[in-house]
Image (cartoon, rainbow, N blue to C red):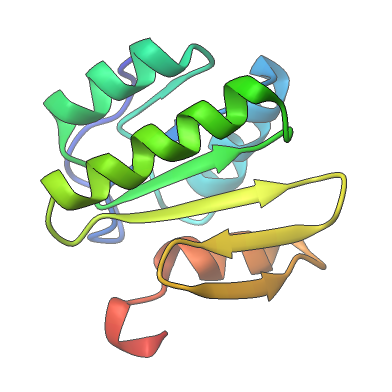
Length: 126
């Protein structure tokens, strides 16, 4: 589902991929509160990948659940990183309170600000 515009308070173009629609909506609300309007969101991986290819976000935020479907999505996203320049992927796991940033960086998820910081961090600040 494509929901945002290209003009946001930050130059950060974000797309959300979530397992749970409620989580997607909560992250969307959190980002909007921080001045970031996501380009779109999806709970279906195939739809998400199609939208990502057409929207060219700078950051993809992924809610993971460690299932086979999740692992397949990670593989496809790794391939996508080779296709799209300057793409960053922020994978969050609510069960383990972790953020994995696909720049070989891992952070502890303690508050919602940790998620926002991982999304908005400039590549040279990592």
